[in-house]
Figure 1: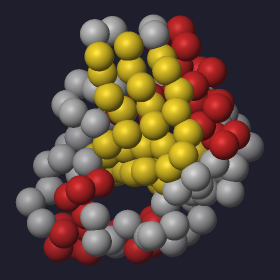
Figure 2: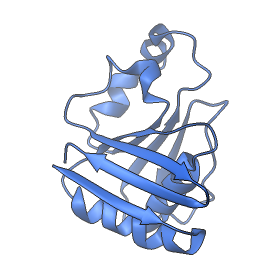
Figure 3: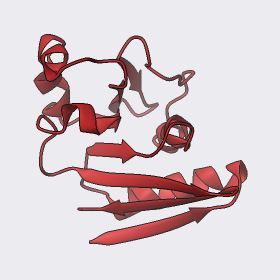
Length: 140
């Protein structure tokens, strides 16, 4: 299945995040694709807020993974694999413990670890045209 959401400004992100989660109710692994600056981290922040995260949500660019817990106790892992040089680094960090934990996993730069992401994940593609973002998702 496929879905698409148009976002014209930042104020629409909470609604877009809720739509994604509603459409993909049973899914836990999300691979976010998009050019640098497309808004992957910003959208993931909105999705985390929609799940009830109260903590400050930031990009895990240097830490590779950030962990959050929603108000209801749901674990969420946010990955940014931009800075890894090989899949061995993902093995070293114990990626299996995250991806197979039944927690939400939001992955930026998934192409760096494509062979490690479970096949039952949602592909989220963010494209930008002028100020409008199109968020397309499939495999849900």
